[in-house]
Image (tube, rainbow, N blue to C red; front, side, top):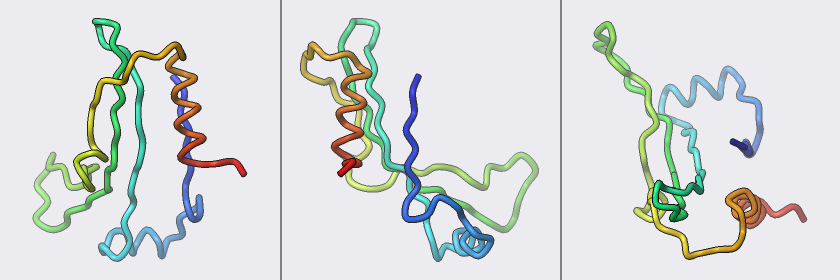
Amino acid sequence: MQFFVVLQPDSILSEADVLDIRQGKYFVHFYGFAIYQNVFGRTHRVQLHLRWTMRFGGVIEGQITEWWQPVGKPEENSDVEEPKSTKSNWELIVEEFLKTFPTN
Protein backbone atom coordinates (compact mmCIF):
# COMPACT_ATOMS: atom_id res chain seq x y z
CA MET A 1 0.00 0.00 0.00
CA GLN A 2 1.29 3.47 -0.87
CA PHE A 3 0.37 6.82 0.66
CA PHE A 4 0.98 10.42 -0.33
CA VAL A 5 0.68 13.08 2.34
CA VAL A 6 0.66 16.79 1.62
CA LEU A 7 0.17 19.21 4.51
CA GLN A 8 -0.73 22.73 3.47
CA PRO A 9 -0.02 25.56 4.02
CA ASP A 10 2.59 24.45 6.60
CA SER A 11 3.56 20.92 7.57
CA ILE A 12 4.34 21.82 11.21
CA LEU A 13 1.64 22.87 13.68
CA SER A 14 2.66 25.26 16.46
CA GLU A 15 1.25 25.01 19.98
CA ALA A 16 -0.90 28.06 19.16
CA ASP A 17 -2.27 26.24 16.07
CA VAL A 18 -3.19 23.20 18.18
CA LEU A 19 -4.92 25.44 20.73
CA ASP A 20 -6.88 27.17 17.93
CA ILE A 21 -7.94 23.74 16.60
CA ARG A 22 -9.10 22.69 20.07
CA GLN A 23 -11.06 25.95 20.44
CA GLY A 24 -12.73 25.51 17.06
CA LYS A 25 -11.01 28.54 15.47
CA TYR A 26 -9.03 26.36 13.02
CA PHE A 27 -10.02 23.06 11.45
CA VAL A 28 -8.01 20.11 10.20
CA HIS A 29 -9.43 18.65 6.97
CA PHE A 30 -8.42 15.44 5.27
CA TYR A 31 -9.05 15.00 1.54
CA GLY A 32 -8.22 11.67 0.03
CA PHE A 33 -9.19 8.77 -2.13
CA ALA A 34 -8.56 5.06 -2.43
CA ILE A 35 -8.84 2.89 -5.51
CA TYR A 36 -9.49 -0.80 -4.93
CA GLN A 37 -10.85 -3.91 -6.62
CA ASN A 38 -13.75 -5.68 -4.95
CA VAL A 39 -14.16 -9.47 -4.76
CA PHE A 40 -15.78 -9.44 -8.23
CA GLY A 41 -12.76 -7.73 -9.83
CA ARG A 42 -14.54 -4.39 -10.29
CA THR A 43 -12.52 -1.24 -9.64
CA HIS A 44 -13.97 1.25 -7.16
CA ARG A 45 -12.90 4.71 -6.06
CA VAL A 46 -13.64 5.94 -2.54
CA GLN A 47 -13.50 9.73 -2.18
CA LEU A 48 -13.12 11.23 1.33
CA HIS A 49 -13.43 14.68 2.87
CA LEU A 50 -13.14 14.51 6.66
CA ARG A 51 -12.75 17.12 9.41
CA TRP A 52 -11.15 16.43 12.79
CA THR A 53 -13.79 17.05 15.47
CA MET A 54 -13.21 17.46 19.20
CA ARG A 55 -15.84 17.61 21.94
CA PHE A 56 -15.09 18.80 25.46
CA GLY A 57 -16.83 18.69 28.82
CA GLY A 58 -18.56 15.90 30.70
CA VAL A 59 -15.97 13.30 29.78
CA ILE A 60 -16.96 9.80 30.86
CA GLU A 61 -14.25 7.15 30.98
CA GLY A 62 -14.11 5.38 27.61
CA GLN A 63 -16.15 8.10 25.88
CA ILE A 64 -14.89 9.07 22.43
CA THR A 65 -14.26 12.82 22.37
CA GLU A 66 -12.25 13.15 19.11
CA TRP A 67 -13.04 11.72 15.68
CA TRP A 68 -12.93 12.25 11.91
CA GLN A 69 -16.33 13.48 10.70
CA PRO A 70 -17.41 13.33 7.04
CA VAL A 71 -18.09 16.87 5.73
CA GLY A 72 -18.60 18.53 2.37
CA LYS A 73 -20.67 17.60 -0.64
CA PRO A 74 -21.97 14.03 -1.12
CA GLU A 75 -19.57 13.50 -4.04
CA GLU A 76 -16.66 14.31 -1.71
CA ASN A 77 -17.61 11.24 0.39
CA SER A 78 -18.54 8.57 -2.10
CA ASP A 79 -17.76 5.06 -3.29
CA VAL A 80 -18.29 4.65 -7.03
CA GLU A 81 -17.44 1.96 -9.54
CA GLU A 82 -14.81 3.12 -12.01
CA PRO A 83 -15.09 2.36 -15.74
CA LYS A 84 -12.92 -0.49 -17.02
CA SER A 85 -9.31 0.57 -17.43
CA THR A 86 -6.17 -1.06 -18.74
CA LYS A 87 -4.12 0.83 -16.13
CA SER A 88 -3.08 -0.71 -12.82
CA ASN A 89 -4.52 0.67 -9.58
CA TRP A 90 -1.11 2.19 -8.84
CA GLU A 91 -1.08 4.02 -12.20
CA LEU A 92 -4.59 5.33 -11.50
CA ILE A 93 -3.56 6.57 -8.04
CA VAL A 94 -0.45 8.37 -9.34
CA GLU A 95 -2.46 9.93 -12.18
CA GLU A 96 -5.11 11.21 -9.76
CA PHE A 97 -2.48 12.50 -7.33
CA LEU A 98 -0.77 14.49 -10.10
CA LYS A 99 -4.12 16.01 -11.13
CA THR A 100 -4.78 17.04 -7.51
CA PHE A 101 -1.25 18.28 -6.78
CA PRO A 102 0.41 19.40 -10.04
CA THR A 103 4.20 19.36 -9.98
CA ASN A 104 4.72 22.45 -12.15
